Structures are given as structure tokens and as C-alpha cells.
Image (cartoon, rainbow, N blue to C red; front, top):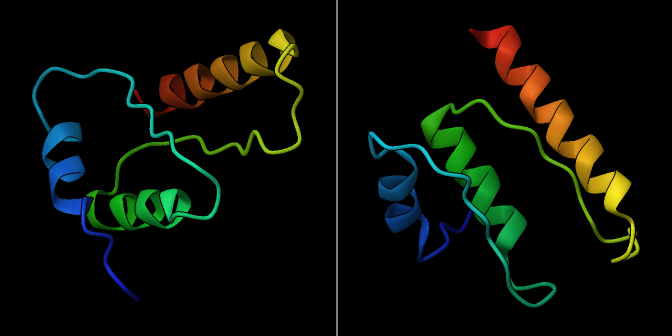
Length: 78
């Protein structure tokens, strides 16, 4: 599989001692999902993936549900 050009810089960022939420944004069909899958494969990080393609921008409940799901998954790993 083709390795996305920004993969190494993102790996460096997510493996820093201070943990922050990382957001990857960009136009459709440029390789964002491929980049994230490559990152997760190399770093074996706990994660929650959800596509927002079919979600209305005004659907705040969806975002809250995704956040809570991620928090629950993280708690199970502790």
C-alpha cells in the first residue's frame, strides 16, 4: 500500500508524551482515511473511528454519541 507523505509527521505528533485530540480534515477523496488506517497499523493506538459522511452538520447528538463511545472504549482499556 502507498504510504501517505504525512504519515511520519503524524506518527511523531500522536506519540508525544502530552496527549491531545487529533483532528484530520481535508477535501473528500484525498487519502485521509488511508492515512489514519496506516497510522493505527503502525502505532497500535486505541481508537474509535466513525465516518461523518452521512451526518447532518446540525446533528449535535451524533457527535456527543461518538465522543461517549470513545470515552467508554478508553475506560475499558485502563
